[in-house]
Image (tube, rainbow over all chains, first blue to last red; front, side, top):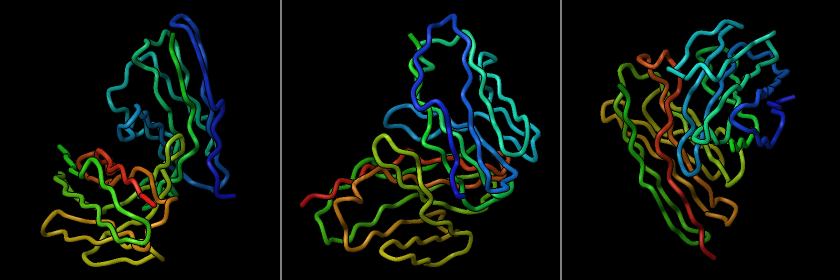
Length: 113
Length: 111
């Protein structure tokens, strides 16, 4: 299994909603990442979990809250988002924090109304 | 801080060879990667160079010169399916040893 699985693929939410994005990998990878990607822009790093501990938070607003329940799962909890938060949210994993290769999930396309 | 530069767009015809350049500035360089992303898809890994020189994988090759802070992706025998965005990414000590992505190059392959 060399896949990173993300759900849902699409999400539309209002500014007062609470929702969660989910990510799962069964490759035994020990580093997992959340990236945000706007149209025609590169992925931007949001959070890094290394051995299930949050190791970096790139000054992301608190309306985004990550969670790593175990080494295979990564969640991103969303609350009180703004329309400018509409983007493709990508989960990725690597064998370890210095792994050469990032494996990306297919992403969640989020629209905030 | 980090900064990467790539051409924004490249156009070529089927069967041709195209080179996509990437120059970078980092606080502490570990390696340079290349990713391909089709519209609506996820980035997929193409190559990683930590040392100077050329790495070849099928129709794609990647080159790195650490002294020049420069690398390129070479695509040979272009096919229509190669139309996509290509991102270079550097693993940077000053970025928590994480990857920072370049702005991307949109490659269009014409028949």
